[in-house]
Length: 355
Image (spheres, rainbow, N blue to C red):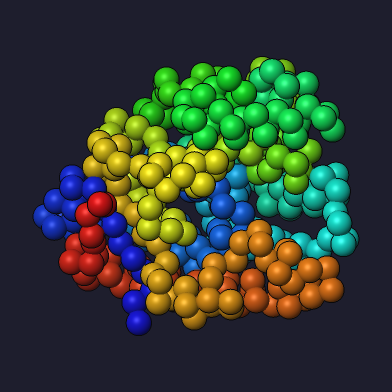
């Protein structure tokens, strides 16, 4: 059974056929929002960051939203396998009351981020081979005020505006891109949404990571991040769910370990099947995702996701944790397969052009 599905743009496929997949050619690694789905990529992340990219050290841009930002903050550490394992272990151990409040969930995520990067802040921000980028959103209008009424009404309005057209989200949210102060990404500036660009520092790294994963109505917003415009900050996946960014600006390849075989621009766009990424931005991109056959071997024949909290409930939390840990363990098979097909050159034969 093949555990991986490979998709690529035309330019990337031509490069694969000519040169194979060379670690030295990879310039950008995106990481999507998606909550528990990120657990299924643990073994692949460990193979890529712990072994494969180390063959060809060079500065690379790591760009993440939500759990993707947490994965990239782990990958940027001196021992990425240890950091990625800390993230997976702590994430699996989520336990909540019957009806957890946003404060309860926020407090867990605060502990998770502290466990992940505590004592490693300077290490991340001075990593010789990586430049971390964290995507968040900042509320406007009702979402700037927040509160028990403004937040749900504001996000309901944002969803309605987005249903008309994605661009209308700009009336409710701005993108705030936190970047490595040493080397701003070539993907900036962006003009699809108003985007504030804020340099990362030891003063705002923790808050930016927490904000990037603060799901509206599930967690509280992060308020007034150091060095950034004042306001309420939430999950970067609302605008940048699967990170459909102008990758055509890069000189090298974009290697994208992802939990699905397509790219949905914003979280609210997943309710609109026609809104899938296409065009020139995908030309240099290689997307690696779990195969349908592999997913069918996992508990409930699917990737872990937020519906599992309801599926297992508060009385079966240990079962959920067991099944999530099983998926983390099985993901090693994807990492092993990636290393095998990258070194053998088989990846070029396996790659399928984006539709």
